[in-house]
Image (cartoon, rainbow, N blue to C red; front, side):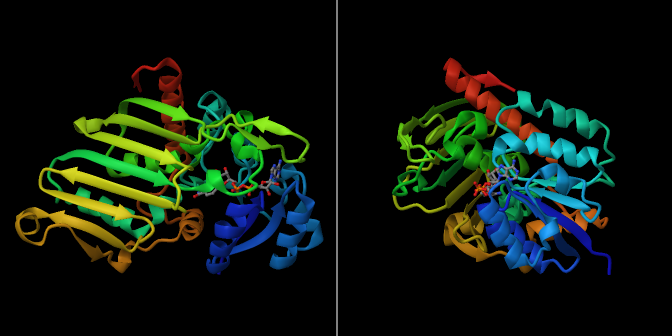
Length: 353
Ligand SMILES: NC(=O)c1ccc[n+]([C@@H]2O[C@H](COP(=O)([O-])OP(=O)(O)OC[C@H]3O[C@@H](n4cnc5c(N)ncnc54)[C@H](O)[C@@H]3O)[C@@H](O)[C@H]2O)c1
């Protein structure tokens, strides 16, 4: 069987928590090289995966140029996604890059240029919009496509965490504007933006507001306090295609919430609701029988909606692009929306896309 040889750049939380465990389940994939500037992390991941010492790189260009790497996963902090992705595409390799795509829309331009030179049917360029792969999201999409909700009127969306309050959390890259771009807006909010574009359609205009609650944190070297530059919480309202209104609340200051996404969609003939702490069930109230009798109740998501992110990447490389494939061009559109929200926050105005 043909095996795709995968290299991973950045072996931090998301690589070791999601990419690597999932890739190990994909029989058509083999991790052949890894890269990290943190020597301890590099060696630990190398030992666990039994990667030969010569294939544990510190410089990402060495991994990209490795002839035994066909596809590259980019799992570094946000500011590196575009330069690394451009290098991957120019080397003719397949790309799976983490979200958000960059720190702002301006910085995405070199990637837009590089993509023009690629045949994206043959050279795969994917973004890790992980929540597209949750069964409840895919089932919700199918229900909407069947027209079961009638005309969609509005949606209410929340992404809540309490991670701002983790004791002793230092001024890591997520709190530094030139490394992260935004705080929860890009980190968590981009998932909601992507899901909304997938489920309900594109954004026409919006207004947003962001705040920083914890203003200072101890620098990584412990020497002194440094300023937190990225948002801890934010809200925005968006007008979508077909006059759908969507309200968003995103926070890392929500006490008691570890990683909660709640999504309610209201139509003229039905309501659906999911909470991604329970991704295998969907809340529904669809049609007259439910509206007048059952009310809101949960249904099990059919097994056919179970899809794995990393399997999707490898299948695409091997010639089978699955439904709702998160093409990197979708991430560019999301980056435009993130920048529009930042602009609205700065200018205190509605911004048209
Ligand atoms: N899809 C999701 O649901 C999801 C969830 C969490 C994080 N992420 C994204 O994944 C990315 C990484 O997040 P994380 O939480 O794993 O961060 P992290 O800090 O835990 O890991 C990042 C790793 O990149 C390494 N790195 C930094 N500069 C490098 C360089 N020049 N070359 C090679 N390696 C380098 C760091 O040493 C670190 O090990 C971010 O863009 C984040 O937004 C996505």
